[in-house]
Image (cartoon, rainbow over all chains, first blue to last red; front, side):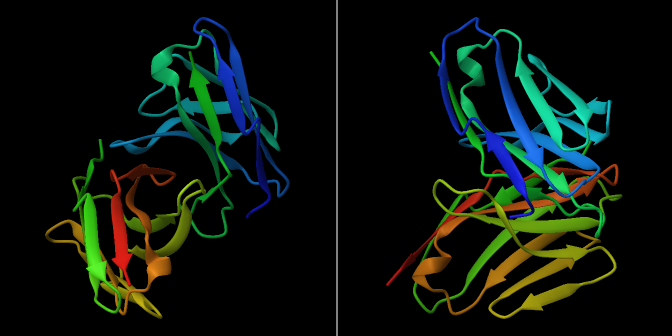
Length: 113
Length: 111
């Protein structure tokens, strides 16, 4: 499973609270991604990183921020959670062995009440 | 930007029959097209992919075809089995390091 873990795996929180999700990888991969998965929308890219402190926005970045202070960790923060951010969040990595190829972490199910 | 459309959204087949899922993309610069399988409650798993310099690729019972002129690509599963039941996602690359995903196809294989 490409050495990717996500924490927490499940979280229930209330509207307006900050939430941070963690993606951890053990293989020193350069590229890391955060997606959200919702019924009828497939997987949509939130933010991605191409190295330490190098991040960029994806197609649904509003309301989310990310940080990558070390290669192995990519953090996704919801500054003030809203019910529309209830979703399953997947982290992915690109090992770089084959361009574009991505492998996913186990996911985090987030519920915002 | 890139846009990927996927059809059908649901597909039911009898065990042993073939299943075909189709995707179209909008950006002619896209050059990498992976397919993912996602079982209930699990992560998406890469099952096969194709690059724009290849027209067809096979791996046992699954195959992917690409028509660059028409900008569409398809997943073919032959001799379907109940364990093939899952949601399948297509994707297309853009800007070399990102993927845009289709909305998924729920495949049900009935014994």
